[in-house]
Length: 258
Image (cartoon, rainbow, N blue to C red; front, side, top):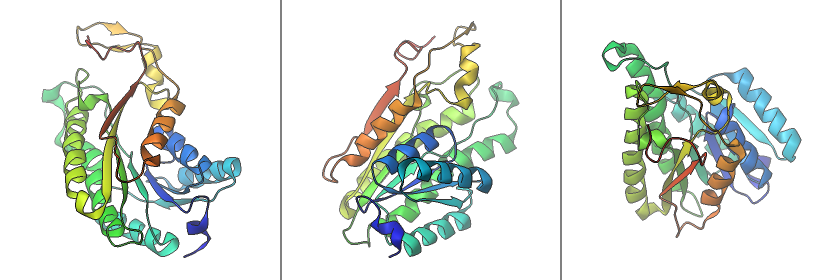
């Protein structure tokens, strides 16, 4: 095992989509807790910059691996690198995802549907599959998988069929993973996030379409609250699990949306 595996608490975490937004905040938080952190994403330059910034802040090494999570060969290669360099994987955060501009369901091109499915659902499945192979055979055995579900896993926004469908499906994947992982000491939970302040949610200040057809500004919350909640989930012993958690801006239109 290289120096990576001896960092901090000797725990290793991989965060997909870790170069920006929620993934970056989560990677920063895990690194500050002493985890050896790997971040993946499609843009190598963005990842390398993020890894360097986090490492400078926390004093712990952060590894960047460029990977399209929708590509099974790239995912397998990335996890092989993790095994070779770190020797194990304790936490996988399936955070990578994508969205498209709001569009009428009947006007959504098939290519956009397929791209969202690959990024949001197939990617989480492929990474979970590779994590199982690592976690069930390592010593000590087991690990934890945390999926970014979004509150769209419960309630859709208007004109968001592809994104909402994938996030509902993530809930099914979370439950199946939690069930199938028991025999390997693999725990799986899901964090549903509502209006964390990132570049992606900046447009909410100007107003977004509501279920009743109105345009309204929506409150946001600091993305650090998301990272703190996820770190709590990751910190539990493997005989305890947060199956689902919702972290949201208190006043956002979710409970009784629209």
